[in-house]
Image 1 (tube, rainbow, N blue to C red):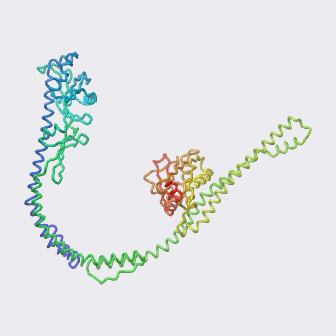
Image 2 (cartoon, rainbow, N blue to C red):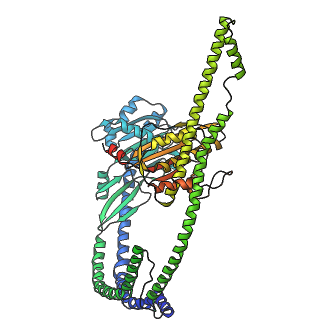
Image 3 (cartoon, rainbow, N blue to C red):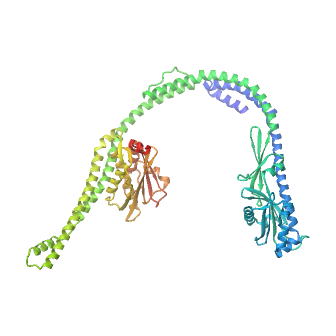
Length: 621
């Protein structure tokens, strides 16, 4: 309270006529009185005394639970100690015999001992004999016997005994918990070197635990707690005590709930305190509401309404408000100054955006034109590099000899075969040139489309039409094979997938991604690689995944790939390809994502596009 009072005093001295000082004066007078009364009631009547009483009750419950679990396990330990310090057991471990087993492991003997499982173990850890019995019906349970053997194999007998001849602890056997007792096998008088160990197990159930604790308890096997835990609910206390194993780690939890009788009395006292402060709080809220509405909310509401008008109309008109000497007046002044600055900045940004848009659009078009012209250059280079399929002099000589009637028939047949082969080779060469020229024509057509659509793309949102993305992938894949960077094998689906996009822009995006993938493959130093494309129909959209086996990239640097001017190629500059592709995808209502498992693991480009109405109708059908 003294700290708050001093802080309020400093604030009043700093801003003597401010709105904050007025509100502080009201809160100080009314809030301190109410807070002091509530704090006095809680401090003197409720909090300390009932917390101590309830904690003492909780400690008692926890100690009784630990004592009950220890007593249950100690009974098994007492039984196993009798079998351990027994001459007949000592003799049996030296020379196992059936008579001892039939007598000591008889159903009646185990029922009298009240144990479910028994076993004799050699010093080397080998189980000589083991049995698990359902003492309620006297039947053997092989599954529980197997779990007992598995648990015995995990017991460190030397550590568990800790310089003693017997010990007890709890073990989890599947979904069950058993108290385990172990003892060294010695003579009845305790002499002689230990010839092994005898193990006894007795199941403990939730019903048995409830009987021991005299409260409804449950063994929580799947969720053991490391230490005693108490969870306080409104009317009950949820107590969980660990059931510890041989190594001291919990194997289960003994859980139960006890009523919070002491808290009921505390709640009654709390109601008294609440009743005494309710009226005070109502008065405080009434006074504060009137003062806050008058001094704060109404002026702020006028500012908010004006901001709505500015946001709706776009006109940065200043707020006309009566001058005030407090924080609200300062806020209005700062708000009007901000509107004036925004108006000036808007004019500057509009002018700069127009110039920047023209420059970026031109550079982006040149980037796409360069990618589209690469296949044309490759086709022309290959055409110029090809020589004639046959030597012209040889052809002329063969024709001359064939025209000579004095040439023997055999020679004439050979000449005819040679000329036919030469003409066939020339025909194949012509077909190859025709195919390459067709590819070059498609690439040139792509360039013309890029240039032709530039003006419309630069000034308005691109029109979206239904187009087959599979056809665009196939077309760009055919062109990319002649990029001249590396030998690339393409794999893409043949079934059409109709999307809603701008066909020219989408073709450029796919062509850019293929070009980047080809460069990534060439960067690995290999002579070739592969690019696979998969297309999946999603709910209301289409996903196109382009995967290459190129050099890949660091996943942490994926966002940097879309930055304007960034490029992973040291011999290149610009880096507008992916930046332009991402913006184009957003303009078409889609997204572009780049993923990679790391350097040397290839990369994946994922395009999310809108499905056309035709595809949606087909999916619905």
